[in-house]
Image (tube, rainbow, N blue to C red; front, side):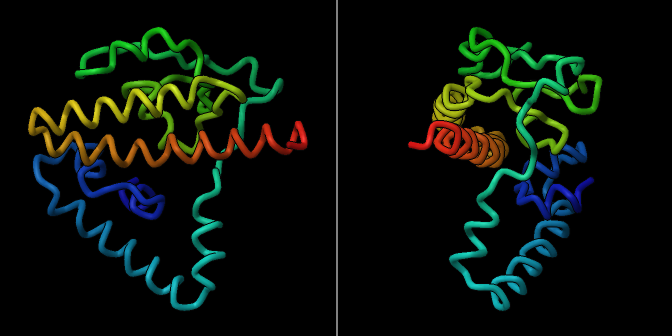
Length: 172
Protein backbone atom coordinates (compact mmCIF):
# COMPACT_ATOMS: atom_id res chain seq x y z
CA UNK A 1 0.00 0.00 0.00
CA UNK A 2 2.73 2.45 0.96
CA UNK A 3 4.66 1.74 -2.23
CA UNK A 4 1.56 2.37 -4.34
CA UNK A 5 0.82 5.59 -2.48
CA UNK A 6 4.40 6.79 -3.05
CA UNK A 7 4.27 5.91 -6.75
CA UNK A 8 1.03 7.89 -7.00
CA UNK A 9 2.83 10.89 -5.51
CA UNK A 10 1.57 10.76 -1.91
CA UNK A 11 3.56 12.79 0.61
CA UNK A 12 5.58 11.10 3.36
CA UNK A 13 3.19 12.62 5.91
CA UNK A 14 0.17 11.07 4.20
CA UNK A 15 1.87 7.66 3.93
CA UNK A 16 2.84 7.81 7.61
CA UNK A 17 -0.76 8.58 8.52
CA UNK A 18 -2.01 5.63 6.43
CA UNK A 19 0.59 3.37 8.11
CA UNK A 20 -0.49 4.73 11.50
CA UNK A 21 3.09 5.85 12.22
CA UNK A 22 3.82 8.76 14.55
CA UNK A 23 6.82 9.88 12.53
CA UNK A 24 7.67 9.87 8.84
CA UNK A 25 10.98 7.97 8.89
CA UNK A 26 9.49 4.73 7.59
CA UNK A 27 7.35 6.56 5.03
CA UNK A 28 10.41 8.38 3.71
CA UNK A 29 11.85 5.09 2.43
CA UNK A 30 8.84 4.81 0.12
CA UNK A 31 8.89 8.42 -1.08
CA UNK A 32 12.67 8.40 -1.63
CA UNK A 33 12.37 5.35 -3.86
CA UNK A 34 9.47 6.97 -5.68
CA UNK A 35 11.51 10.12 -6.36
CA UNK A 36 14.34 7.95 -7.78
CA UNK A 37 11.84 6.41 -10.19
CA UNK A 38 10.52 9.85 -11.17
CA UNK A 39 14.08 11.09 -11.73
CA UNK A 40 14.92 8.08 -13.92
CA UNK A 41 11.75 8.59 -15.97
CA UNK A 42 12.45 12.32 -16.25
CA UNK A 43 15.90 11.64 -17.70
CA UNK A 44 14.49 9.31 -20.34
CA UNK A 45 11.23 11.03 -21.29
CA UNK A 46 10.57 14.52 -22.61
CA UNK A 47 9.83 16.57 -19.49
CA UNK A 48 6.86 18.43 -21.00
CA UNK A 49 5.18 15.23 -22.18
CA UNK A 50 6.00 13.50 -18.89
CA UNK A 51 4.38 16.24 -16.79
CA UNK A 52 1.32 16.23 -19.04
CA UNK A 53 1.00 12.44 -18.67
CA UNK A 54 1.39 12.63 -14.88
CA UNK A 55 -1.21 15.40 -14.69
CA UNK A 56 -3.97 13.30 -16.19
CA UNK A 57 -6.66 11.67 -14.12
CA UNK A 58 -5.95 7.92 -13.99
CA UNK A 59 -9.35 6.79 -12.75
CA UNK A 60 -12.70 6.85 -14.43
CA UNK A 61 -15.72 9.02 -13.89
CA UNK A 62 -19.00 7.59 -12.69
CA UNK A 63 -21.17 6.15 -15.46
CA UNK A 64 -24.60 4.54 -15.59
CA UNK A 65 -22.85 1.19 -15.02
CA UNK A 66 -21.84 2.40 -11.55
CA UNK A 67 -25.37 3.13 -10.28
CA UNK A 68 -25.36 0.10 -7.94
CA UNK A 69 -22.17 1.27 -6.18
CA UNK A 70 -22.35 3.11 -2.84
CA UNK A 71 -22.77 6.88 -3.10
CA UNK A 72 -20.05 8.99 -1.49
CA UNK A 73 -21.26 12.00 0.44
CA UNK A 74 -19.24 13.84 3.06
CA UNK A 75 -19.94 12.33 6.49
CA UNK A 76 -17.48 13.92 8.88
CA UNK A 77 -16.85 17.44 10.06
CA UNK A 78 -14.23 16.82 12.72
CA UNK A 79 -11.51 19.02 11.24
CA UNK A 80 -11.38 22.83 11.10
CA UNK A 81 -13.13 24.10 7.98
CA UNK A 82 -14.66 20.75 7.01
CA UNK A 83 -18.18 21.71 8.02
CA UNK A 84 -18.93 23.22 4.62
CA UNK A 85 -18.22 19.85 2.94
CA UNK A 86 -21.34 18.42 4.54
CA UNK A 87 -23.55 20.54 2.27
CA UNK A 88 -21.91 19.69 -1.06
CA UNK A 89 -23.83 16.51 -1.78
CA UNK A 90 -22.68 13.54 -3.83
CA UNK A 91 -19.08 13.59 -5.07
CA UNK A 92 -19.11 10.17 -6.71
CA UNK A 93 -19.32 6.45 -6.02
CA UNK A 94 -17.09 3.88 -4.37
CA UNK A 95 -15.77 1.40 -6.94
CA UNK A 96 -14.81 -1.05 -4.18
CA UNK A 97 -18.48 -1.70 -3.60
CA UNK A 98 -18.28 -0.86 0.11
CA UNK A 99 -17.24 2.35 1.79
CA UNK A 100 -14.05 2.28 3.86
CA UNK A 101 -13.55 3.86 7.28
CA UNK A 102 -11.56 6.82 5.97
CA UNK A 103 -12.93 10.36 5.97
CA UNK A 104 -14.89 10.65 2.76
CA UNK A 105 -14.86 12.37 0.40
CA UNK A 106 -11.31 13.67 0.92
CA UNK A 107 -9.61 10.28 1.20
CA UNK A 108 -11.59 9.05 -1.81
CA UNK A 109 -9.71 11.33 -4.19
CA UNK A 110 -6.49 9.37 -3.44
CA UNK A 111 -8.17 6.01 -4.13
CA UNK A 112 -8.11 4.40 -7.57
CA UNK A 113 -11.54 2.90 -6.87
CA UNK A 114 -13.17 6.33 -6.55
CA UNK A 115 -15.60 7.11 -9.38
CA UNK A 116 -16.07 10.92 -9.31
CA UNK A 117 -19.45 12.19 -10.44
CA UNK A 118 -19.17 14.11 -13.71
CA UNK A 119 -20.00 17.73 -12.97
CA UNK A 120 -19.85 16.98 -9.24
CA UNK A 121 -18.86 19.52 -6.58
CA UNK A 122 -15.14 18.79 -7.02
CA UNK A 123 -14.15 22.45 -7.43
CA UNK A 124 -16.00 23.33 -4.22
CA UNK A 125 -14.21 20.46 -2.42
CA UNK A 126 -10.91 21.86 -3.71
CA UNK A 127 -11.76 25.35 -2.45
CA UNK A 128 -12.78 23.90 0.91
CA UNK A 129 -9.47 22.02 1.19
CA UNK A 130 -7.60 25.24 0.40
CA UNK A 131 -9.37 26.90 3.34
CA UNK A 132 -8.63 23.89 5.58
CA UNK A 133 -4.93 24.06 4.63
CA UNK A 134 -4.83 27.73 5.55
CA UNK A 135 -6.61 27.10 8.86
CA UNK A 136 -4.31 24.20 9.77
CA UNK A 137 -1.27 26.28 8.80
CA UNK A 138 -2.52 29.11 11.03
CA UNK A 139 -2.90 26.66 13.93
CA UNK A 140 0.58 25.22 13.36
CA UNK A 141 -0.68 21.74 12.44
CA UNK A 142 2.08 21.03 9.91
CA UNK A 143 1.48 17.29 9.58
CA UNK A 144 -2.15 17.87 8.58
CA UNK A 145 -1.08 20.61 6.16
CA UNK A 146 1.15 18.03 4.41
CA UNK A 147 -1.65 15.47 4.26
CA UNK A 148 -4.13 18.03 2.96
CA UNK A 149 -1.68 19.26 0.31
CA UNK A 150 -1.37 15.73 -1.00
CA UNK A 151 -5.13 15.32 -1.10
CA UNK A 152 -5.47 18.77 -2.69
CA UNK A 153 -3.28 17.66 -5.58
CA UNK A 154 -5.54 14.65 -6.20
CA UNK A 155 -8.68 16.78 -6.11
CA UNK A 156 -7.09 19.29 -8.51
CA UNK A 157 -6.44 16.45 -10.97
CA UNK A 158 -10.13 15.44 -10.85
CA UNK A 159 -11.22 19.09 -11.27
CA UNK A 160 -8.99 19.42 -14.35
CA UNK A 161 -10.10 16.06 -15.76
CA UNK A 162 -13.75 17.06 -15.28
CA UNK A 163 -13.05 20.39 -17.03
CA UNK A 164 -11.43 18.55 -19.96
CA UNK A 165 -14.28 16.02 -20.07
CA UNK A 166 -16.85 18.80 -20.27
CA UNK A 167 -14.78 20.63 -22.89
CA UNK A 168 -14.68 17.50 -25.06
CA UNK A 169 -18.42 16.89 -24.64
CA UNK A 170 -19.42 20.45 -25.51
CA UNK A 171 -16.67 21.14 -28.02
CA UNK A 172 -15.66 24.39 -26.31
